[in-house]
Structures are given as structure tokens and as C-alpha cells.
Image (cartoon, rainbow, N blue to C red):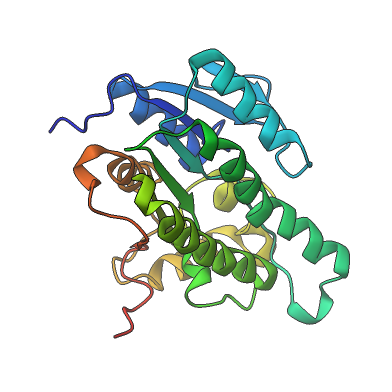
Amino acid sequence: MDLGLTGKICLVTGSTAGIGFEVAGRLREEGAHVVSTGRRDDGPGELHVAADLTQRGEPERVVAAAAERFDRIDCLVNNVGGTDIRKLAELTDDDWQRSFELNLMSAVRATHAALPHMRPGSSIVNVSSTAAKRPSSGMPDYSVMKAALLSYSRLVADLYARDRIRCNAVTPGPTATDAWLGEGGLADQQGDRDTVLARVAAGRPLGRLAEPGEIADVIVFLLSERASYVTGAAWSADGGTVPIII
């Protein structure tokens, strides 16, 4: 199936590892020009801009570099984000602020900067979480910020539909990336790694964590011309974890 992404200019944040890395790879396979960004010096994009998107001005700098190189932006994937296991009662104001900058404002700033460079037919995908739909007691700040990202996605979709710019969100469940599997990651923070991962997998109706490529496939589809009538949606990619509320 031709996804119609050949020659598209695609900016993917948080693309030096995990889901973002897989998205960048699939976009390049489809013939897109990829701009990658992350804190690491190297990335999978044709153009890579090292940046810490929690810092004011950095999302704008990345977008400006992409627009200067390619003169436009056709696709934006706001993927950067992360959390640690914490209790609601123990969160400080600084904890909330850091999560706000990482999980929400990085996407808000990148989107605001990118929209003037987007043409009719462009697309935005924001990577949220199942925790946005069913808050996680172990990730309280993350849950709140990812829920806000869903609201922001719908707002952008409504406001820019007349310009034929689409905006959707994806809500992955636990995914087999370094965030969960790495040393000191989310599994280690909750006890014995193998025991925690087995418990988390058993909590999904499909009985396992997602592979990052499985989430990337959904994101790339939503960016593509094959999803040209999809906007304002929040696509669950969670192995059946969060039920649909009717």
C-alpha cells in the first residue's frame, strides 16, 4: 500500500530511541525526508538537531532548522516524553513543572512553531498514553499531562481543520523500550524486573507489552494520505487495555 509519504518533510521529536526511532525509520522507508531530534548528538534523520525540548526556545530552534533546510514541514510527530514511578502525595511543585515541560509544553511549543510552515494536507500526531484515559496511580503527573495532550490535540484538530491540517493522538500502553526495560527504568523502579514485566504483560488482554514498531506503524498511518479523513481522534494502541467508553 502506497502511503503517499514520498518526499514529505517529517519532524519527529524524541527520535533517537524507542518509538520515535522506529517512526523515523519507517518514514524514511516510505521515502520521506526525516528531521530527528533528541538529547543525543546523533539521530536517524537526514537532518538531526540535538536539543533538550524541555527548555524554552529549543522546540522553536528545531522547527526553524527543519524549515530552513526544507522550506516546509508536512508531518510533525510530538513523541518526546517520559516519567518515573512516583506517588501523588510525594510530588513536589518542581516535579509537576518538569513533567509539564517534558510531556506537554514540548509538544505545544513544537506545534505552535511548526504550524506556520505547514500546508494543506499536513498532519500532526501527538504521542499520548493509556494513562491519559485511565490515570496510573504510579505515574500521576504523567497521566495528567498526557490527558492534557489529548485535549490539546483535539483543540488543534478543530481549529486547523479548515486549513486541511489534521491532528491526531496515539495512546500506547506499556511498550518494550528502554523506558521500561532499561537499567533503572520503570520496571526496575517497581521491584524485580522480570516479575514486574510479567505482571504488566498479564494486565493487557493481548498478554504482552507492545513492540515500539507496532506503535510506530499506527503513527505513520495517521500521518499518511490513507488517513486523510481522520482528525481529532485518539487512537488506542494498548493491546486492549483501556475499554472504549460509549
